[in-house]
Length: 433
Image 1 (spheres, rainbow, N blue to C red):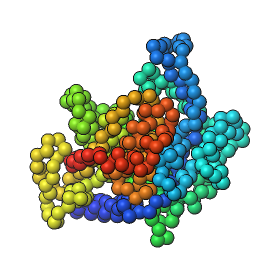
Image 2 (cartoon, helix red, strand yellow):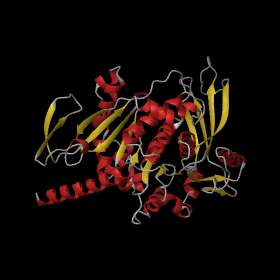
Image 3 (cartoon, helix red, strand yellow):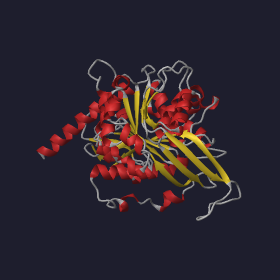
Image 4 (cartoon, rainbow, N blue to C red):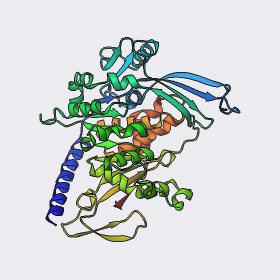
């Protein structure tokens, strides 16, 4: 019993430190600061069949093939360029390319986004004799990825600890630092350490965001030991399961039976009910990441929208705390009835942000990157997490209605996205584990 009480006190103390840090880094009073992105800069080769034609194994079909600047890190950074309000600092991208034609094209495209060329490519390492990272994607007639091959090995080798450390000044002075899962675990650890380096110098610590990129790479945050200092992770459902499984040390299929969704959540036409039910059914996975020290889990659910999950402190949501006592009352996500739960039981708040309805879906490739870009611009501009996520879902909506990797134009300005986001109705529930 003594050991249990000690663990509970340590857990509560860690949670209070996390809340204090999140209040500091996401406070509406924050001034606009720079966004630094560390990740992949990739040449995307995208192929899709013409209408009326379908993909057939073993042969070609008529269609369109385009080369477009891409890469998760680069896409997020370009999204920040297009979304950021007037006067906001330019984002800084830390990445690597080869000295080939593709690398030259990527650098030229990146310079072309700015009104000045001074220093905008200072974070991009040009590697002699190396091939630029390239991803070849084939889309089906609905715009979904049918198959893809990614050659991003250069990012893992050359965006290394030494290259990251050489930009420590940028990282520690940033408002938000975004790390993408293309980085190897040691590079993630170096970037997180560099960002936290100035935290004892009477300055705000940068908010740290990890974008998993893929199921295979999502576990690198755990391998790099950065979950405990990460403020936001943005996995889809499969990435969430993989990250939580790695954090628990599960066998590969140990959690399969726990995460099967009930038939009601699969059959219901309401994306609202489905999203909350998905979060509830995966509550153990979400709780695992929160227990590991992650401040916010942004579970992205495609057309259903996204769910923002945060720890309930002391057995009760921070915005709903009352006088100290042995039990709390709150509303359970499963049915709305008032329940009484022990204060020591784990819980997290679950805020559902619906997706904006898309009328002309063209490609789903850049939606996740646009969501992160919109969120981090909003956070760097002083918005709270709920409003930031609504702004991010608005940016994702714009992304699916364009063939470009990154949406741009008047509709994706910060003012326009913020205006649309203020009309979004949030729904917050408490999920008990």
